[in-house]
Image (cartoon, rainbow, N blue to C red; front, side, top):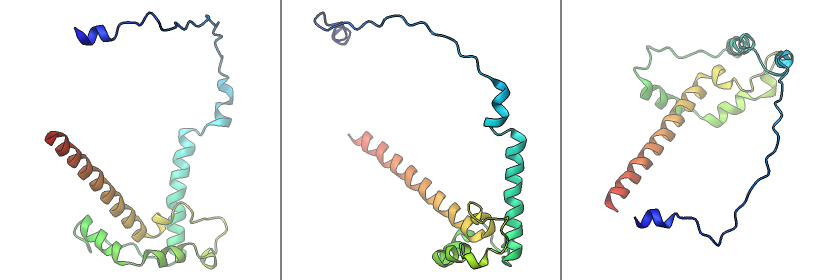
Amino acid sequence: LQKRNSFKKDPKKKKVRFAPDEVEPYNWDYSCDQDVYYQKEQIMAMNKQRFTDARKLRKLRNIKRPSKEAASDDIDLSKRAHNHNLDQLLKEAYDPERDIDEEVSICGIEHFVYPVLQLEMIRRKKQAQNEVLSFKKAKRQALKLA
C-alpha cells in the first residue's frame, strides 16, 4: 500500500497540456527508391566483387592461403596467426608500391587478402567475447554476494 500511495499525483505540481496538432500524412515517393537505396541484387554483386578482388590481389602478391588440414582447430590457427608480426604485415598490405592494379583497392578487404589478418580478427573477437562473458559472470557473483 505504501508504494501505491507514493505514486499518487502531487496536487502542487503543474500539469502540462499540449495543444492538439494536426498530423499530415506524408506520401513517400517510391519511384526514387532505386536512386537512394541499394537493391538486394546490387549488394550481393558488391559482396561477390570483394571476394573476386581479394582473390586477384592474393594472386598479384603471391599470397598462399593456409590449408585447413595443416591446423586441427581454431586455437591452433589463432596461435599461428598470433606469431606473425602484424605491424609488418599491415605495412606490407598498405605499401603503395605493391598496389599495381588501379582498379582494385585493398582497403576494406585486407583480411580477405591476408588470411593471417583474418585469423587475428577472429582471435581478438573471441578474446573480447570471453572478456564480456567473464565480466557478466563476475557481476552475477557479486550480486549474489551482496
